[in-house]
Amino acid sequence: MNKITKKSFYSFLTLYLLSSFIFLTLAAYWFYTSQVAMEKNANFYKMNHIADLVSAQVIHSQMQHTAFHLPSFQKAAVSLYDKDHHLLYGSPVQDVDFSNDFYMKEGIFTLVSQRTAGHMNVQYVVVQSDECVQNIQKIQNKIAYVVIITALLILFIAIFLSYIFLKPIKEKMQEIESFVKDTTHELNTPITALMLSTSRIKSKKEYDEKIVKNISISTKQLYDIYASLSFLSFDTKSEAPKKLLFERVIKEDISYFQELTEKKNIHIQTHLQKCEITIAPTKAKMLINNLLSNAIKYSKPNTTITISSDAKSFTIQDEGIGIEKEKLSLIFQRFVRANAYAGGFGVGLHIVDSIVKEYNYKLSIQSQKNKGTTITIHFH
Image (cartoon, rainbow, N blue to C red; front, side, top):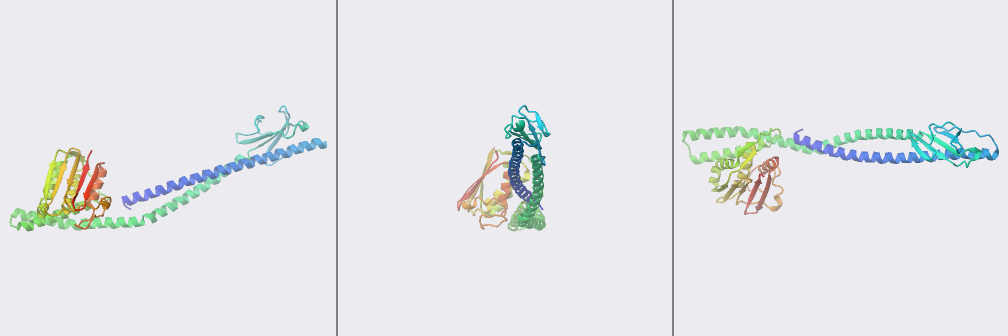
């Protein structure tokens, strides 16, 4: 799995897990609060029922003149007090706050009832229980268990879906990487042979100048393709940036493409001012190479290419075939070509765009079909 596929995989996985866990957390919280509310209500009604039952027995004993026996209840302690808060029956779990009818303290719920109406000198029926707190703790444990199991299931599903979702992308990326590596390997050998042959012929000065010029042009075109495809290698380490005079790079590239411009009878007009920027030298050359080679490639013979630079920007303007308006937003995508006027892999403008973004430059493009294209890079 290469860097781009890994990044896509982790991005999709993070987004899926984040949204799923947010939903799971909200669902668990809603379920917990509703269960706690239900448990508290049930506990309140249960304690009220016990208080009513005891009060009824107190009143019955008073009316029938029978002995009163305080019944015992599971998970609840009942105690009876007189109006002066003196304990008459039962054993309280903790001290009672008679100013509150129903409250919780230290995990124990206390209900204070006065339904005896003073019969048998009983003023208060107090019911205390920790059953509700214990039940809430059980609810918490159950929800935590379900959340953990669900989270693990979501994680498994997320990984599974991520692999399924990214499988076509992974396969396509592998095809592209394989294409790039195979192409760069195949191009390297003829490029080296052509350059050596050209150098030998020129040094002996026994040659047909036109043929050698064509060899030189072909060599440079092959080398540009090789450089572009090598630049797209996903494991290439970035070159350290340094200060350089951009107008010098422009002049070198104009000279580099001189044979090709002469062959198409294209005139290069320049307005170059000092332009000092901090950039990796190879990437500076890639910027000019791709923009100038595109301008030459899509210009018709006997036209002019105007190149200008100043301290803040670089502009290249051609009188070529132009780009349709609806395709302007697509031309910076990898392997996308605006038209079939000239050959190429559709990577030149993608490389330009990636370098511009890497250094936080700004790129603007204006184009009119059959009239030409103007591309400006703003450095500041």
